[in-house]
Image: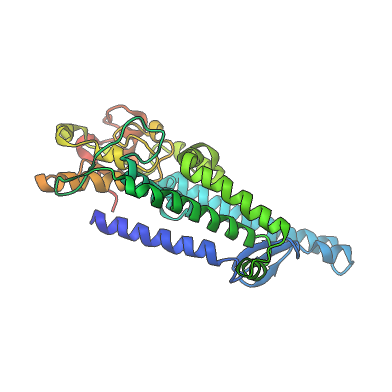
Length: 321
């Protein structure tokens, strides 16, 4: 079941990454610097200020356009994102974000190359498989890791430019080697900066540099009943034969068995849950980690045993399906 959940998450990530790349060429969403306004679903999305200056509409009509075309979409998108984060945490990050999908891809490659998901970790960790086998690091994966980081950096730089300039122009110039100096500089500098970030600071960006992720975390922390990974402490003895698989696999380098405030940047990817289930499966034991909400989540949020008022205990962790 957990494997199916991770497969489903991979499909969500792949689909949203494809949307991220294809949105500009399909005019689904982009801001055109030449036109100086947005394009949305093939339509020109303006605030009507040019019509106001030209005297074609009144000030009242212009104000209405600004409200409907500007503030309302921002409120709907921002409010929806905050509402989801309040209840489910950084679900967007773990299930959709195109940056996080790159982070996880490079994590896996770097783990195979060095036994570490980031170069800043002190020592390599063994990767334990469901059958108990241990995968050792292999240096032959280093070239692939560097190439993946460079390839993603270049792709991101090109895609970001197509959000600002006509995609047909950018891809034509790129294929024919006729980029303008400014286009070449944007792609070159963007590729360099993104390559450095993908190789050396991708986790730091997700944890401290991404405004979208930060706002989701703040909203999530404000709700003690929000969905969080809960740990069945009454069965903690079963962790004795495990190589900290849940800690090792976490793409954000968190400790899933701790209290909520120490999981501030959790992306709800559920990889720790999947790892625990795989380790416990040969022992015919249930996973010690679950997504929990409401009363069960309060225990994780506060770090204190549940009281009679909450009506829950560590034995009463209810898994979110």
